[in-house]
Image 1: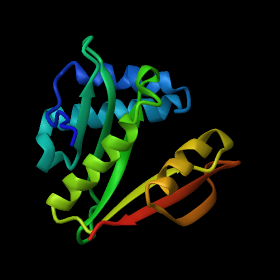
Image 2 (image 1 turned 45 degrees about the horizontal axis):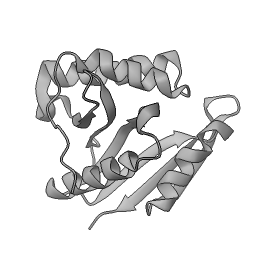
Image 3 (image 1 turned 90 degrees about the horizontal axis):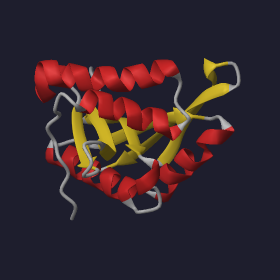
Image 4 (image 1 turned 180 degrees about the vertical axis):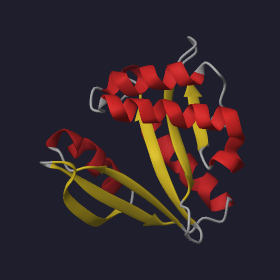
Length: 161
C-alpha cells in the first residue's frame, strides 16, 4: 500500500495552486479555495481546521497529486473529499486511484462511515464522474445549474463501513 505525506508544509500552498491550475478545469475561484485549504491547515492543523491531506511529492519540489478531506460539520461519521487532483505527468499512472483508496482508509481509521465527493455536471467533468463510479461511488444527487447556468452539481457517495 502506498504511503503518502500527511503533513502540509509552507511550500505546499504554491504547489497545490500550480497543480490545480495545471488541470485546466478549475475556475480561478476554485483554485483560490484549494490554496486556502492548505493555508488553513498550515495555520490551524488537521483537527482545528477540519482539513486533512494526503500528498504525493513529485521529487522536484512540487506535488504529483493530493487529496484534501475532512469531517462534514453537523453530521455523524460523514466525511467529504474536498479535493483530489493529479498533475499531468502522473496521469494514467494509477496515482488518483491510490490516493482515493488511501483517503478511504484514512477516513475509516477516523471511524468515518461515508465519504462524499462533489463534482460538476459539465461535459469536461465526465472523466471525474466516471472515476467515482468506477471506484464504487454512487451518484446520490444532481442539482442543475448549481455552480452557474449549465453547470450543475453531482454528489457521489460511498459507504465505507
